[in-house]
Picture (cartoon, rainbow, N blue to C red):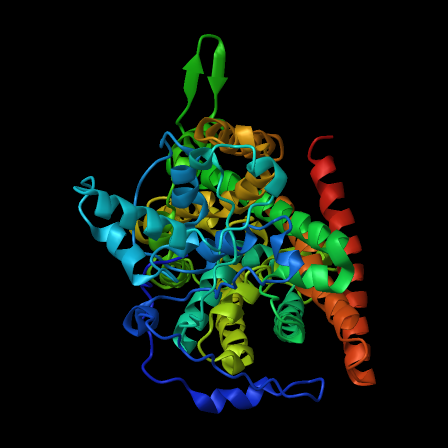
Length: 567
């Protein structure tokens, strides 16, 4: 659950790349992908380039036409979700839309790909120029820094005064690919290891111990389809994101459909965050309530509203690098929660005595959805691939991050189910003893993590909708209202469908199956149909068939159980 830019990264870069990993990058289509590193342009700041963090490379105005179509903000907004940044905190509130766009739309361009003179302007004191020469130089610097911006509605923008034109995020020319092997692995784990880990014991309760086989099978297929996305990206110049792949495979319709699926999946994750906060805070403060006249809000409703009030201002931030900096501890938080689960079983004498059942056939569809949700990071993998210093390491990086995530998932699933058995809740934190200090550490860690990730998860959808606003409506007041409306809508749905496990199973069955298994294979066959062998066609067809079956069965079962909770 997953979760989904930087000036600098918290993740420590390795000084040397592990070239032995490149053996795993053999092209399955029989064609090599030897990449030639572009020579650095004269006068460029090599030190700045080498020190910048994992940056998705930008392309100049010669980018293919599909990179100028909606959503143009996908790459930048998803980069926020998958990377780590240095904090830079500020709110919306600038009087001109030009400055607004530079601060909250062009998030990923901070100090990357900028000319040295442009960078110097960022670090100069905020004093006005003292001479006409300085004013002229400032105008020239501004012109240079904006030369790669590509408006989405050119004819409309030409009718707007220059200082009020909305700056749509473009594909900036850059040769930076500075993400090391270790950074790629950590960013991948940060995307994969989210709230899904809390429901893995519940998945075993639903499907039995045989569900662990399903978990491992999904992990293997997720790795395979992730490598397929790599081949799709390498097939044509300029492909850098999942929507780009959809466009290359199925045209504009494919780009739009895949984008909508990815955005709806992120929207559903935000709903899950609110349900999770409501459930866990209610466990910490079960008697909390709010009475307004004759209306009394119980603890679940009260904490859902309170969480919404807390996270809403974070969606107004012009620069989300502060939240991304904090959310980098997501990997540590996931590991800490699993360690706490183990300590509760050992120290608090809960024990690991429950045997369970090998197979619970009626619950398998729900288990499939829960396990599928654990591997819903494919919307971010193309961004991670595009940022790698050595792209031949991508299959190995993918294998490592999926393998480590699966180890955490399986460990939490086995320990949680052995400890709580048939009374296992949809989040194992709800089963932890109330008076245990270790339990409180686990629950508070679980509560804190989604608060930092909510804005990072909802912003990609918000930015895509902001692209569709008329030029004269792209101002900060409108954008604040739009983002606030999105947050309020997630609250209403979370209060209407407060079933964490069932909503997760629904998202995993429907959207994760599409994004992780079905669409990568379909795009791979559509783009490289003349170059693939029969064994690859068979493998992709098998994965598509498995994905469709799991999606249908899991979606039907999840919806049925949600409806049953209302009858």
